[in-house]
Image 1 (cartoon, rainbow, N blue to C red):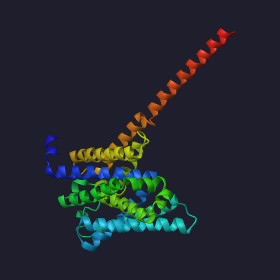
Image 2 (image 1 turned 120 degrees about the vertical axis):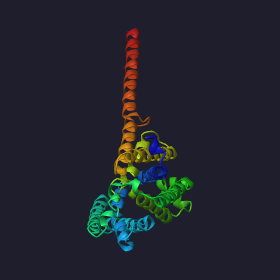
Image 3 (image 1 turned 30 degrees about the vertical axis):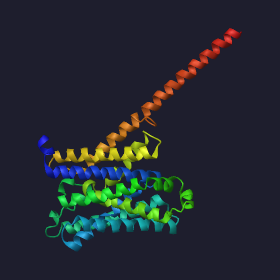
Image 4 (image 1 turned 45 degrees about the vertical axis):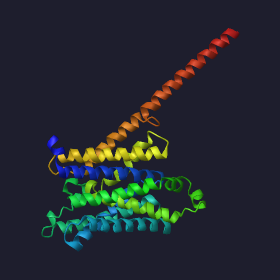
Length: 307
């Protein structure tokens, strides 16, 4: 285990997945309060065709080009979801389900075609399904680090603006904050986080890394700022531990392990979270019952004394 930690390649990958988890936890809080957590799942699946098409155009794996292809494909999926919702009577969740299925099915079809071509099985595109951080080279890690760092900086530098945008958009508009620009920035960093993370976590599970840490953090605090910090920490811990465990085996997929650690943190939060944890609520109910019983006994004793 110690020799694994001394591996320079693993150290780079651990660093990249940790900052990916931090970025996913951060952007997940914005999506949570915007009530668009499930949109991440749809856009992640919608990104797959872009990845494969980018590979077909180049004939080789180039993470930057693949990220651009995935981003275009994901944004196209977001546009179709909005178009279907605004132009028909179909609700948003139904539109997301339709786009998710169609784009993902198209991506799987393209992936099957690529894998049947000469050298296709060696392309490594299958890692985009469940994630395989160990397959990343140093240039991939640097690309992921740079893009996720930009996402984190945008959220934290504009914290006041994000707070206004999410909780009081009318007041924000009155102060001169452009909601159109905020929507554009939000969707850009949202899609960037998704497409950057699909090689490490996979298109199927990147949504979990965005959703679970923010939900877990909600069990510990009512403060938006504290929630973002806690969600970022939980996402980072999940990314680091999941990557480390997956590195212990041969060709173990990274995404499932990252999600399992995120789920473990969620269970802990669900049980012990100081604001909404089930155990804390149980203790508070028991305490409340004892107080009610104590006051009721006092009232009865005083009644008897009066009689």
